[in-house]
Amino acid sequence: MRTLCASTLIGEFFVIGFAGLVAMKEPDLSTATVWTVCGILMALSVLLCGMITRPGGVQLGWALQILLIAGGFVVPSMFILGAAFAALWWASVHYGRKIDEAKARFAAQAQSPAQGEPGGNPA
Image (cartoon, rainbow, N blue to C red):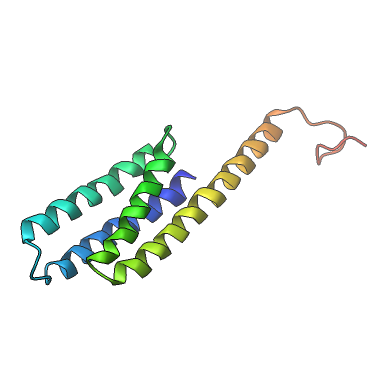
């Protein structure tokens, strides 16, 4: 799960940076405001890469997805990009957990003594 989620978060890091460049064109927003918000979100996306397997890591990832979608109120294309990354986040968490479960099953089978035939299944 960690690899899939971290890949999604690194992709979000770049999308947030590009959204910041687009948001700088808004006359109502100062450059300092744009880069403060974008910098915090970019730092959060990188920090979450290391926190995925810790308690609350996935929930913080969902909070970041909500913030990305909400960014659509400033940069309208973020509604679409935020929704796309939320779907990627769901897929990363869902399929990442399935992969982790399969790895654990295979590791348990490899450590258990072989029974019967070479396939490990009793006859």
